[in-house]
Amino acid sequence: MDEKNTLKIYNAVNYIYSNFDKKLSVEQISEYCGFSKFYFNRMFRTVTGESVYSFIKRLKYEKAAAFIKRNSDISITEIASMIGYSSSNFSTEFRKIFGVSPYEFKNSSFINLSDSYERIGKKIKDYKVDENSFRDIDKNFCYKKINSMKLYYKKHILNYGYSGEAWDIFCKEAENNNMVNKDTVFVGISYDDILISDENKCIYDTCITVKDSGYENILDIEEGNYACYYFYDSIDRFEKVYRDINSVWIPFGKYDIDFEKFIIEIYRSYIEPETGKIKCEICVPLK
Image 1 (tube, helix red, strand yellow):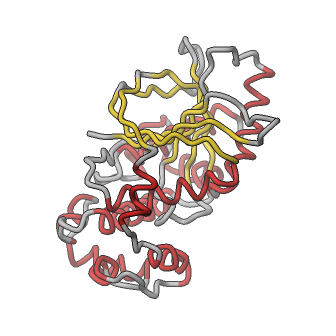
Image 2: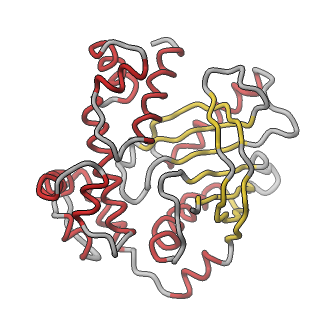
C-alpha cells in the first residue's frame, strides 16, 4: 500500500481514538477518509491487522477496563454509557472479552481473565502500593505548562517494549531528509494503557517538532498542563518506570488526569554513548 493511503488509515485511527466514546460506524469513518466502505475495510485490515469493527470494539472495552480500575467512584453503568453501551450489553460483552464481569474486575485485586488477557491479571496483582513506593515515583514529578507543538509523526502498531526499533528507523529517515537540527525536540505519544491493552496492538507515534505544516502527516499538540516525570537512566529502565507511572502513580494519586489526552514523552537528546543513558520527560496530561 502506498504511503498516502497508509496515512489516511492512520488518520482514521486518530479519529477513532478521539471519538471512541461515540457510536462509530464503518460508513462514517470511511466517509471521513474519502473511501468507499468496501475499499476502506480492506485497507484498514491490511494496515492494522484488524477489521474496523473489531478495532473499535477492542478499543472501547480496553478503555472501559482502564476507567474501571482508575475510577472507583464511577459506577459500571456510567462507564458503559461513556462508551455507548447499555449496562446489560456492556457486562455481557465485557465477560466475553476479559473472562470476568466488570464488577469482578473492579473489586478483585487478582482475577483469572480469559487467556488473551491473562497477563493483565498478573499486572493487576501488583497493584498493591505502599506509601513509600508512591513517594519514590511522585518526587520525580514536576508540574508545568507545555507549549503547543507542531509535530511530524509516524504511527506504529507495536509492543511498547520494541518502540526503540521504531525510533531508530524514524530518526534515520528524519536525518536523511534533513529534518533534524539543534532545536529539534523528539516526542513519543502513547495512546494505550500498557496495563490493560493488548500488548502487541498498542498505538505509538514517533514525532519530531517542525516549524511548518508542509507535510501531510502533522499532529498539533495544544498547550496544556502536565505532570512531568524526569527520567535520566538507561533505556532498559524506561519500561519499568513507565509501568510504575501507569500502575501506581496514576491510579492511586489524587490528580485530575485528563484521560481525553495522551501521555507524551519528550526527548532532548539521543542515548548518551558514554553512559548509555537518555534524558526524557514522561508527561501526563492534567485538566
